[in-house]
Image (cartoon, rainbow, N blue to C red; front, side, top):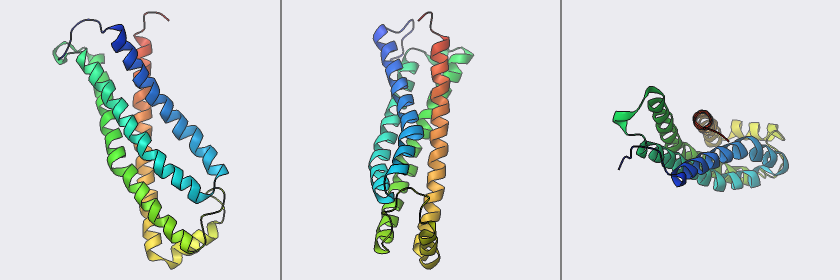
Amino acid sequence: MTTEGDPSLSAKLLQLVLLSTYWGMQIWFTCISSFVMESHLNRHTFGLIQSRLVPFYLHLGSLCAFLNLTLFAVYHPADLLDDREAFQIGVYFLCVSVAAVNAQWFGQMTSEIMEDMHLMEQAQGLGQDIGLSTNREAYAKLCETEGRYRRLSGQLWLYRRLSSLCNICCITCNAYSLYYLAENLTSL
């Protein structure tokens, strides 16, 4: 169902709305809300909110990335692509792939591990402290005494880092895509 020629105004608007929605979610979720919640909520409340919001954010982001790729591909047939358009398709494809892996694997695993850790922390009377940097000694002691908690803590660290790398990759892809769109605007 590829189409030659200029996309309709509706298609252009949809592309812009999808890209800006995903970009805005990324900036808000990554750079603003997490830092605000971390410094004002206790660990378990913060973790509970994150465990509910992160899967929604990751899946909605994957959907936006997929629809962006689809819209762009429909109006740019493979046999008519120039080098910049081919690169842009690659950027959209990378974003979709990384967002899907993050949503289906890393985000899911992080939420499950956090839930298990919260149960162990609650059993020790932990988790009501505000911020992630308070009462570090008690969490370090729990890591020393509970092998399962130590293993989960290591896994959580790994999955959070991998998820963050995926998120940074998608932010970079969307920043480039916004640049590409801005570069191709004829006027404001």
